[in-house]
Image (tube, rainbow over all chains, first blue to last red):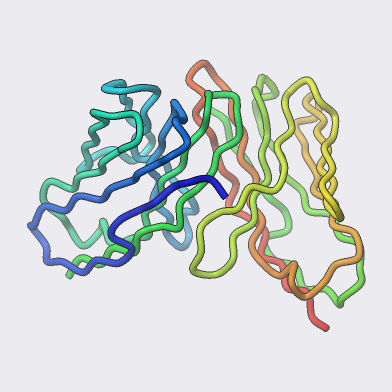
Length: 112
Length: 112
């Protein structure tokens, strides 16, 4: 399996607090992606990165920001968490844009 | 905008049957199509990737085909087993930014 580690794996927090999720890869892949998965909506892209400090928005980017200061780390931040951001968050990597994606095990985030 | 549809949404079959899962997409200008498996509470596991220049890919009991002109891909599972029970998703990469579009998945149950 691709070396992808998401942390934390589970988190419960309160509305209005900042939250940062981390995706760490050991594969030296160029592309990294953040998704959320919700019943009835499937997988939706939040943000993605195509290189260090190169990021762009996905389908559901409002309320989220990302940073990639090193090839191996891609951080997803919820500046002020809301209950609608309760979800399972997945990180994925891809060596190049036209290469297969590999997924992490996910972070289950609950915002009360 | 690319749209990906998977039919059926759910499927229940007895062990030993040969299965066909369908994935259709609206924009035929794709880079590749990838099939995944997702077990409950887990991340996505890559099964097969078909590049736009290919017609099919095989891995063990799995065979995926691609017909770009008709906007369709099928995942064929031979001699199904209870361990094949999972949700199967397809994802299409298209457009200039290598952004994947996911289908909602087919939930498969193989009963003994």
